[in-house]
Image (cartoon, rainbow, N blue to C red):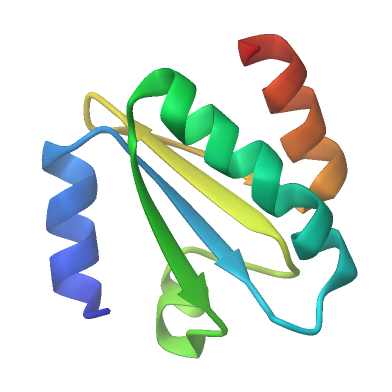
Length: 91
C-alpha cells in the first residue's frame, strides 16, 4: 500500500490498520481480537505485513502495532498487551 493512499484513507475513513509479521506469535494471538474490534465498530480493516516504509512513517517499533483512525483522529496501540486492553474496553 502506498503511503499517500493510506494517509488519505485514514483522514476520510474510520479504519483500523494493523502492522504485523507472519512469524510473530503475538500477531497470531491479536489477529482475531483485531478482526472482532473492526467488525464491532464497523471500521475498515487494513492489514500490512512487514511494510518498512509505512512502519517508519507510523513509528512502528514492534509487532503487532494497531493504528485506529476515527473521524480523522489517529491513535496507536503497540503490542499485544495494548491491543488486549483496547479489546476489553470496546467489547
